[in-house]
Image (cartoon, rainbow, N blue to C red; front, side, top):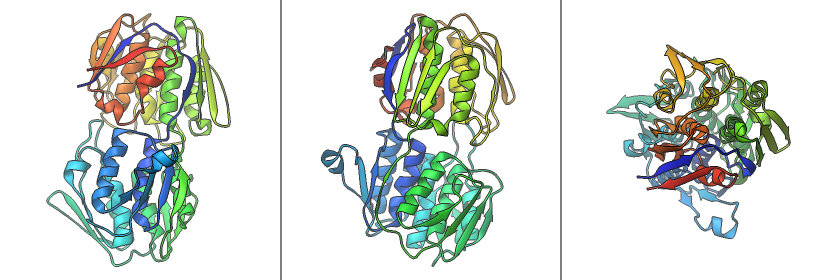
Length: 426
């Protein structure tokens, strides 16, 4: 099984190109179920979660043109669904990737039936799908849960007003896709505002959907009879961007980091940029690039995770790694997931001073970390350990990096190209 070997102590200098956003690509791939015509997607990241989703889509009958990458390096995925082979999303796929629930709305809307395994537990906490089910029932679906599967049927969904009990990104996306082919108008209140929701809406609009309000907490969808093919480029990954920004900020103490991130979307992570500037990093951005410079030990920064556009839960672990060697004490409060401090014991193995009380972690910055063998517990925890390894003295070995491969495209290669001493070993 692969591991990452990191020898810390080097600043990051150079350029990194940001990949497409995993959390935008996954629902947009599912939108391919909603039309018989080709949907060509550019800037799709090469990740384990993407491979799992393509495997599931093939099972449903989606035709995926593997040659598209050869003809045009940017057209990494071209797909179409003229007919349905199966309406079932089996447990063996869903258990490895919770985003599989996103086939529920498209299957039900276009083909009238779906059988999707319940996702089950998750390392970072419960992420129930009850909001998906309640919303689809509002649209007229008949839904039962038997033997661990959601069974959904509808001759044709009908528009309705849906008020979700909580802000849910995948719930908003599932309901938006379902409503795109429903009869009449659907209004989703308390909708998620994330850039990935907006990106899905833009793709659906390119396919002929009538959607307004994406990016606000009220989305209106006027259902159409059918969607057509389209071309769409996936939005840059704001979490990958933020992770590399934190890595540069943390390693600046070793003589100065100067990192330019291209093909980024700075407008999608303003909360992260503001916090890094508050910590003492120098940041410039314009259009599709961000430059960060850090030349000293930064100040400890407290954060509280909240739904977009506030500070993202997917950046909490990376900021904790940054705070481990910052000057002062920080308080990190996690309000989204109840079990998202699993990286703390591993950071402590590297020499961090962290205390946890309920949903809050208190981090006292130390002068330095020391390399050790650590284990990744989830996707963003993996990224925090990489950042910690980059600043630790000596060698750090990170095992179970399959978590990292779910959401970061060639992370070790990108970091090595800007000066990090990092390699993948068996």
